[in-house]
Image (cartoon, rainbow, N blue to C red; front, top):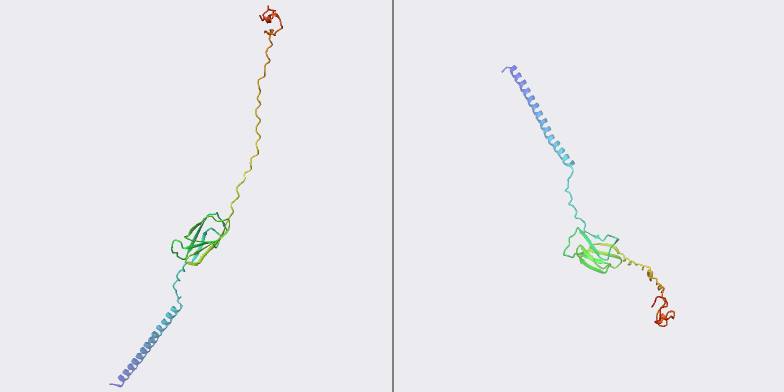
Length: 207
C-alpha cells in the first residue's frame, strides 16, 4: 500500500472517530436533557398537587334542638274560667298517651297530651308550667290572668204611675113633671068643690 493511500485512510479514520465522538456527545446531551425533563415534570406535578385546594366533606346537618313551646295561652293573655292549653315539642320524641306534665300555680298537677283543658279557674293571675314527663329538664312556662266576672247589670224600677182619672159620668137631667091643667081629684084633694066628692062639675073638666 502506498503512503498516499495510508494517509487518506488515516484521515478518513480520524474523521470517523470525530463524527462518532460528536454523535456520542449529542446522545449524552440528549440523555441529560431527557433525564432532567422528568425531574422538572415531577416537581411541577408536586407543585400542582401541593397548590390544589383540599376538599373536605360537608358536615352532617345538626339535629334540631329539643324544645317545648306553649302555643296557647300566650304570655300575659286574659282567658276565661275554661282554658285549653296547647303545647308543641320539637327535637325529641314522646312515649305514651300522656307524655306531658301540667302544673298550675305549683299545686294542680295533671298528665296529658299536647292539648289539655282546665275548668273552673278562679279569677286572678296564674302560672302554668309544662314539662316532658320523662325528661323534666325540657319544659316551658307561661303566666296568664282570669279576669273577675262583671257585676250583673242593675235595672232601675220604673217611676210609679198615677192612675188615670175615671171618666166623668153624667146622669140624664131630671125632667120636672108637666103641670096638670086640672084640679087633682080624690078625697081631701082639689079645691074642695063638690065635683071632687062626686058633686056636680064645677067646670074644671074632671067629672
